[in-house]
Image (cartoon, rainbow, N blue to C red; front, side):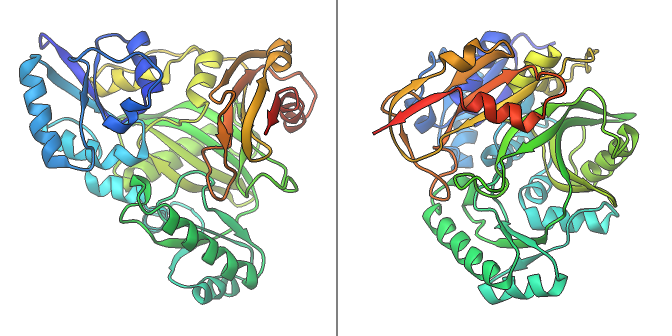
Length: 419
């Protein structure tokens, strides 16, 4: 064992860095963009713990990282990444240091929502029919060709950002223009840099799920299985695909079996070259079975790490470090039924008051974390899909009451006033 072994964490946010420094002190070296560190509210790591550098300049990172490793006598034993924008750099650095991680080709397949589905379909893994559309007429043509509702989205987007359901040819044309405008406004963001394509895919009517899993040499282990709780379609402030919450499932629903899911996850991850590390996947289930939507070689973000920690006593961030360092997967308990509730703003404006007293005092609620405060300025989608996120709550659902109804009831207990 090297004297000073560390896992290189590439390009994550300062809240994750602070989490890991507290939960796994001294076990990671953080490679961070200076702009991220400058805006941080959390304590700054010691000089040996963090290397600041331009993550868009791999050659500069190579030089700075080599110097840092020599100066502090650090031996890298693994690479971990928690952010889509940094996966490509993580792959490059892993290859350069002979450490296990998906290749750049695999990362490219995962990041591209068109290529990933085409790769799955060639491998016999079900996913929505899809194609690249280069104009509004092509989008309308795809809709006419499948004779059913479709979804338009950026090829390299994230979550529900710039994602539109289209039920008419006219909606396809207008949504295409909205996405194109949105991509132009976001051209400087790393997530969309060199990825300005738009994909059209069939809309599958089904229940949506998300899970974290790992493909090991002898088995597929599911670490988290959650049902996505969608915001009501009639909610004017919630764009299509907005997730209101995540319901942690202790057992698979009757619509599919765990063994079937394991088989499909193994096939899907192998097709993309993402084995041996924690992956996140979104999938739909309809009467025809499971259909994969997207897969990424990192654990799920949002409020999911907090939900898993609260419900299953698993620290998924620390577990990611441990697996990257080659440690075995530890035994896990069954977990407890919990919901992760995402708290969204209902309007734009400057926050003049925000009060979580009522929701915090609800007996169902075990955790409330707000990331917005007085004087925070909220911008609503589609202009900004991050700004309207106020924080999250973790709660134990009451029995025999609709989960979506409970989410809306608790959200109503958060008081927010605007100028």
